[in-house]
Length: 435
Image (cartoon, rainbow, N blue to C red; front, side, top):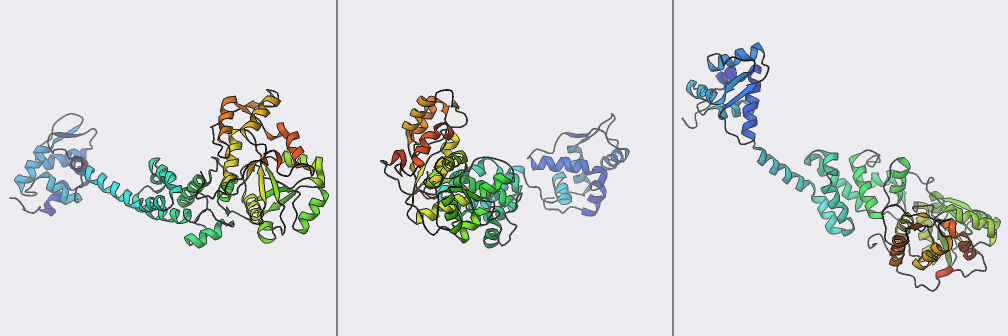
């Protein structure tokens, strides 16, 4: 009887009704799992109609009790003997519900589909190794699967994400919406909450080392770290003593700090540049320099934590004019991370920011002006011994604690290169080769 077709009309009348759908579903589930169609299946609380349908199928009452129990061997025999399905229950369920794909086969097929979806991510890691660790991480932590749900949905999301990451960092800085329109064909493609924006921002942060955070301001700063701006006026940089535009000259003559927006730097950057510019992390240092030295203060730029797009634009502009930089920041793990991020964009020499300076600060400040170090350790590539010294002493020393030393270097009578003029500047580190 092999190959004898199912009598579909009779089969649907006998087994295809809604009152036996539970039975068909149980059989199909067994087939998917590769289990034999033997033994009994039960329905805990059947309706009268479901009991009646089982009785019509079997030609007798299927048994007493509260549950409805049907033996699959019996159903198979009924279908074969009646000629409704000469090849039995499996052929009948397949005719009613379609081809049954075993779960193992389904899983293998789905994993293969995911591998194909990840193709663009794998190519990105091969072509640009700086993205390799991030690409491996987003695969392993399931972020792509949570965002896309299916391989078919994941593929275009990943292709667009990779398209974005291949263009980063952007120099000079650009509008995020204009960039999205140029690269992805829609000005809203990188709006908050879209899967592409979530993945692309994750990859951008991995590229620059931008710290974890939440909120609109944090996302704006994270995008800005790769040169993509929500707008060109919210990104600013604080300066003192810089010249080269009428506004800068006026503020420098008065010895007052000046706030420059990215828009100003893009449209009217300074036309001159000093040979040396000092860079600090905290506004308190710049304010104190203005108070103490006024118009005689040496040129100073304050990054105010993680360097903004405006700060990086200004520093790159000055670097192109031949300016050398001296950097100082807080002696803590966050300060080291900020310094390392800046090093990926512009070359600088430490300004009282070495292991020896830290040890001297520990000895000079003592417990009164320092706090216990906290957070995750970070490297100090300009002086590897500095990170080791922080771990050894476990003390945080902010810039305000060594303010007198910094101010002494910022007067016109001081050596313009500060404490570490003897150090040889390292090569400029680009985002592609940054440690």
